[in-house]
Image (tube, rainbow, N blue to C red; front, side):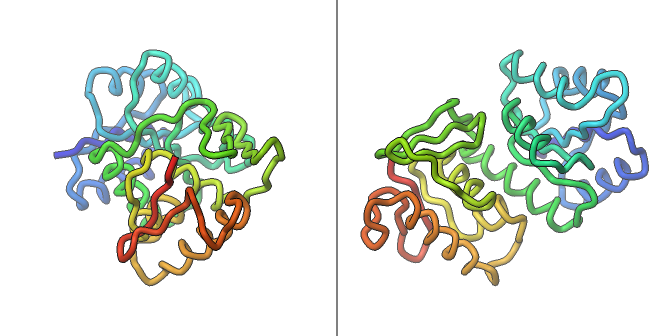
Length: 228
């Protein structure tokens, strides 16, 4: 049984998350402050950590930074009322795998948990280097900056998230359903055109010839992959 560690100081919210995660079949441990959460992360070997940022004793940023400095690559889903872009950038820079802003929908939260679990279970949660390159495109994951041939490319937030999701797979195929859950938090195929539309925009911005892409490739009847 896969284990989830919830580090959340709001006891009512933590109890609600625990109950719903257990219904989904996960084993759940809960900590209500950063210091206890860090110790449980070290000793409990969870498959996923749900981490609040505003915690007593040690804030979530320090917990995340400490885990990554110790070489622990457990997927971390930040769950926080701090939803400003700068907060998200800092979280991703420190090594977070996903970020959900409060208030949030339960179905979205569970879909993101499921996506992270599947990625880690299939080797898809590999950490990216600070700078990743393919063709004439470079991606700075610390600053969320994308350049093509030296020119900065303006990607919308979901376009960037989609690119990162493909990069993390290192050439492996991602289905539309996987991308919907990971990038948008959707749990069904009904929104699959959303993925196709954003892929088309990535090709327009990153490919030399979008009509004949060399990197963002379609895998027929399956999904997409990124050819490095």
